[in-house]
Length: 255
Image (cartoon, rainbow, N blue to C red; front, side, top):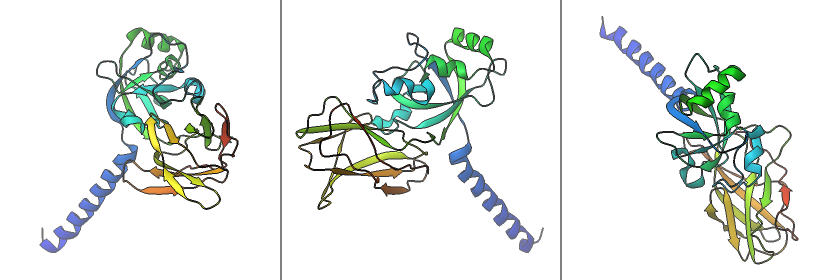
């Protein structure tokens, strides 16, 4: 073959290979194993390491999971994954979409699913019972966007908080497929901001928080390419914030 013909073909092949590799970062499944909470009820746990509390047991209809490496020191809390088992006798092609709410490992597994989610990988209720009897199954998984229709990002003030001395909170309804990797707390009058600490899981804390209404800025980072975007919600945390209360931030982030 003449060199003049070979070069365009080689260039086309390399271009197509680059497209395939790029697609694989978001669309390809990773092979692994999954177990389930053996002592749980149908839903997840309300004492998960992410700090979601009872919300973490019922979010996404109870289709939740603990994870080991994907926990990433709490950065993975709130992320969504499509998980499907690979035994064609029992498993559906779609599997189940789960939200990460806890940290844990069981043997060589990446996921410890709620019983509801574990059975949700099956084609029917009989197959679900068979899966539960197996205990651990081969799976494949991929990161997908979280979707909470008609829900905005919401702050839940942790019960350990005490106005005005100490503020701790978690962020609910994290949409899209990006991680919240940093949070700033800002005074609304002069917009002086301070970077918050990740106490554990998805819990962000500030000692001696500013007085007055408080604004948040959140850094959303894409795991696959490192792209980062700061998001400033529409609504503020009110000056008289209270432990145990939730505050709608008035914004959705679907990227």
